[in-house]
Length: 504
Image (cartoon, rainbow, N blue to C red; front, side):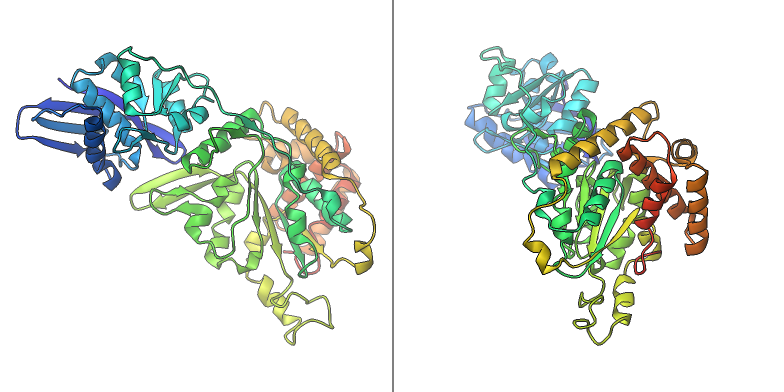
C-alpha cells in the first residue's frame, strides 16, 4: 500500500503542490527516488537514512520507492528531505497515514535528524492553506510561514520532534508570526545641503512611484539623495508586505521569520550580470528588479551597466512583471518598482565645468549618455540635472523640510491614489494609470492642455512622454490636494521632463 505526504515545488513565487508517494515492496534492498529530482533531491535518501538511524529506526530489507508527482515537474532543493521522511514513516506505519496525508512538509534534514531552515516557507504556507492542510517545517522557518493565518503551521526542531507530535507523545504548539519590522530610515533629507529642486523631484517620484534619473558631476549629492528615498516612502500595506515577503522568502532573506513593512531599497553594483538584475541562473531565481518589488531599485553609475542589462529593463518597467525564460523553466516574477538612476554627465564627470572638463568635451558627454538608449531614457518620468553644491552652502544650517514632513505629504498623496484606484484592479499609484483611466484622472484644464500640446510640438515628445507627463502632473496635483490638474501642475511636470542634455 502506498503512503502519501505532500510538499511543494517552486516556480517563481508560485508553490506548486507535489505529492510524495512511498511504496515499500518485496525485492532486493534499495532506496530510489523518481519523479525528475535534481542532485540535492536524489541525495535525500542518504540524509533520510542517517536521520532515521540516529532515531534508532532501521529500514527494512525491502525495496523502497519514492515517487514525486507530478513526475514531469522538475524538483529542486533540499526541502524535499522532510516530506520524503514523513511519507516513509507513514509507509512503515510509524506515523498515521491520515496525518501524513493532511500535511504539507518542507525542511532539510541533518545527519543527526535535526531540521535545517529552508527558503520558501511563506509561499508553501499559502499552498497549504489553499489545500486545507497543515504545514510542517523547521522551527526556524515557522515564524514567517505563520503569517498566513489561514494555515496551521507546526515548527519542529528535529524529525524526532515531528514524530512525537504525530504519535501524540509530545504535541507541538502552532507557530506564531514573527515580528513586524518598522525600523525608520536613519538618513534624513535635512542632511542634504542645498539641492532643493532635487528634493522636490524625490518627493514627486515617491508620491506617484515615478522613475527618476539624476545627472550631475561627481560629489554633487546624487547617491546621497537617493539613499534618503526610503525615509520618505510610506510603509508597505499588508497586501504589499505579503507580496514582497514571498519573494524574499524564496531567496531566504527574511530575518528570523519577521516580515518587514519597510519598502525594499536595492542598489546593485554596475558589474552585476543580467541574471543578477533580471533573474535567472540555476532554477530561474528572482533578480534585483523582483527583490525591489513595491520598493526602489537604485542603479548608480547607470551608463556603466552593460547595454544588454539596461535594455532588458524596458519591458519590466512598463508591465510590472518579468518572464525569466530558460530552456527548462519559464517563470514569471512581479517587479513593480521605482527606478532611480544616477549618472555623470560624461566619462570624466566634469562636462559642465570648462576648467575641469577633459579634452574630448563636449563630445564625450554625448558618447557617455548615449549608452542609455532613447527608448529607455523615454521611460524616465523625471529627469534632473543635479548641480554641484557651492562650498558656502555646506556651512549653512540645515534647510528645507525633513524626511518626516515630506513622508507625511507623500503618504497623504498615496492615500488619495489608493482611494482613487480602489475599484480598479491592478492600479495602485498614478504611475500605473493608462488609457481611459489616465484620461479621466489626469486631463488638465484648458490652459494646462494648451501648454502641454505646445511643449509636445516644440520638443517632439513621444506619445509615451506625453502620457508620463500627465501622470506626473496628476501626482503634483495630489501633493497640492487639488482634485483637478491645472496649468502650474503641467508646467512643473514639464520642467522635470525637458532638459538641455537629457531630453529624449
